[in-house]
Image (cartoon, rainbow, N blue to C red; front, top):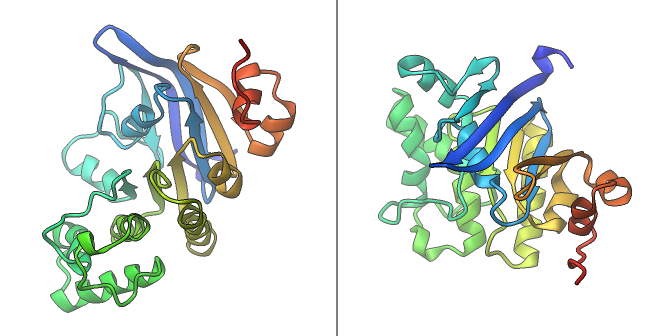
Length: 253
């Protein structure tokens, strides 16, 4: 794999809260244009890993490179340059309840650009159209369903045209039909706009629907226990925990 094909490099990452090690020795690469899924059981460190990848948490050891730039050590202007390359959405959508959808989508543009107000409005409307929310510009977040809030969160994360998107549990709390629609949106954006996605989820149907490749974290192992394509891991993994996860099997007594 050439450096140009690699968007994210995670090298020998160790995370801990106080003296409690969450994971260690975590290394992997994310290729340009793929939908890369981080999965595993509860408490294995999926969201913690994502927060290290976007620079919210500092690792005990190791580093994270975004397009060859180290986000774990970058400061000031250099850090802002890296952060402009990425978009992030959280489980709740994290919309500001006192603002309309249009105003929510405009926020990154107001912070990072000097575009005229009408240009910001135009871009915000375009992003809402991309996620299927055209016509909802003046609605408040409280007037939206859970699925629409998730879509609006994606639209805001796309405001600055990032090449790399991080989604934390995008299907959490959604019914199966809404969740399937969100999966299709992620695939459409990845294929049509060539956006690279890093998605944290434990939803099996979503994993099989969207993932080009996955890594599986395990709480007991404190690290990665599987890497590859979901269908191959389901059929051929030699690791019992991996097989049980992908085949939705309970632990034996």
